[in-house]
Structure formats: structure tokens, C-alpha cells
Amino acid sequence: MAKVTFNTELCKGCGLCVNVCPKKILELAKDKINQKGHYPAQMTDQSQCIGCAFCATMCPDCVITVEK
Amino acid sequence: MIVFEKPKALADVPFHYCPGCTHGIIHRLVAEAIDELGIEGQTIGVAPVGCSVFAYNYFNCDMVEAAHGRAPAVATGLKRSDPENHIVFTYQGDGDLASIGMAETVHAATRNENITIIFVNNAIYGMTGGQMAPTSLPGQVTQTSPYGRDPKHCGYPVKVCEMLSQLEGPEYLERVAVNNIKNIRAAKKAIKKAFENQIQGKGFSLVEVLSSCPTNWGMTPQKALEWIDEAMIPYYPLGVYKDRSAE
Image (cartoon, chains in turn purple, brown):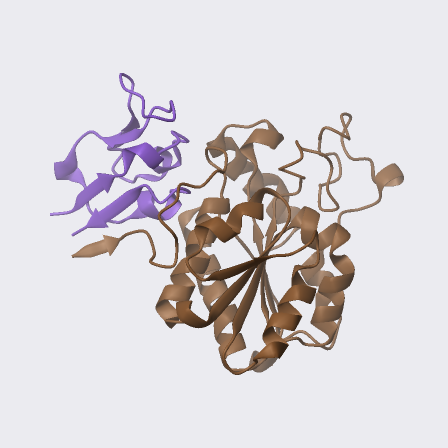
């Protein structure tokens, strides 16, 4: 099963990963902010992840690590 | 099994770029090429002046900071000092390479200097606050062209790949973009090829990467990527402009 981890403190909340996810299981957090003051990206449903790494490819800040 | 992680050639330092700025993607593609070719120990990068001026903080290889626009000249010296062992790349923006650094770029190209240039074109001066650049599109609104760039007054944008392709010198010129997954993969291939050309001693390789500047374009990060598709790619068509070894 694919596993996606976010280095949340590096995230700037640009949302590019959210738009590129083919399964639409990423979102920007609504209720927490990181040290930089951004709403970080997070995953809503890990079980649906197919490990395509589109999110990590699109991320400008190397926030995302994908394992399969 | 890890499918995707931060490349080893990138230092564990957060980028200072604005949210959604594609400089981060291009840094990563360069680092991935360095990792895959296993050349981190012999690579020397040359950082420009502009948004990517701090590039020397982000790569684990040796880095040199050049005066504004002079990166190809500095790279020439670094490469010629030990051509067998040094792999030299420059990372420059359009305000650096296409304006003040034009002479250095053209002459490095015509000498077929064996270096790799990563040219990031975002059609604006980012670091100084969004002024019109040599590559700003006709009609593009910037801080110094509030009614849109008027070619009658300001001339036309510089198309670097087309211009250099007229010279006999350069080995490899390609324009790519990083606005979607498909283009990012093509960009990675082009950047890797530009490094391979240097390793094989083929000569001057320049990859122009169409990049976004959400902050100074006044767009959301996603809208900025769409604007690359809608406005930039029609004016700056993607593709290989010169590849001597393929001819």
C-alpha cells in the first residue's frame, strides 16, 4: 500500500499538490498552521492513495515523500 | 520502497521562494540529474543574481556566486581550470541571463564552451518586485508597464533559444516548462541530457525552463501554471531548438 508523508514545516500551502492529485484525496488543513504560518497540505484518505507521486513531483518545496 | 524523496544533492534547507514558485521544482530537477549521474563530488554550480541568488545555500555541491549576468563567464573559468574533472552548471533567471548577461551568454554559446546552463524564464523581474523583463510578453502588465508591455515603446521579448540556435557554436538548446506533470518529466529529461552532454565533452548546453511567478504576476499558484499554458507557451514554443548530436 502506498504511503505519503508530509514534512509539514516546509509546506507553504500553495495547493499545487491538491490540484494535481488524481484521486482528490489531498487538502489544505483548515484548522492548523505550521511554524511559518501556512495551512499545510494533508491527506484525507490514505487507503485510496495509489502512490503515483504526482503530488511530490509537483511540490516546489520537497515536502512530500512517497513510499510503496 | 521509497518512490519519491528529496534528492541527496539538495541540502536540508527550506527554500526561501514564495508559495507556489516553480524555482523549487527546477532546483529539484537539477539535483535529481546530479544524483542520477553520480557527479555531486565534481560538480560546481554558479548562482546568479535574482530570486535564485541563494541557490548556493540549497545545493550540496560546490557553488560560486557570480556578479549579475556573469555566470557563463565565471563558469568558463571554472571549467577551463580543470576540464577533465569539473562539471560546471549555471542557474540563471531571465533578468540575469537575457538582459545584463546577454553578452556573456552569447559568447559562451558561440565558443561552444563545455558548460550547462539552466535558464529559468518567468517573464518578469521577481526579486526586485515585478518589473518588466526582456522576456515579458507584449501586453503583459508589470510594475513598470502598468498598461501592458507596448512593443512600440519597449520592443519585443527576447527569445533566447531561437536566437542562440542561429549560432554555429551551441551543442544543445531546448525549451521546456514545469507547469504540469508531463512537462516536468520532459524538463527532467532535458536537464539530465544537458549534463550528459557536458560529461561527454560535447559542449554548450542550455535548457530554458518556463517558470511561474505567482506573486508578481498577481495570480494564485494554480492560475499561474495555467497562464504558462495559455500565454507563455504560445509565445515561447516548447521543443528542441538545436541538438547537434541528433543532426
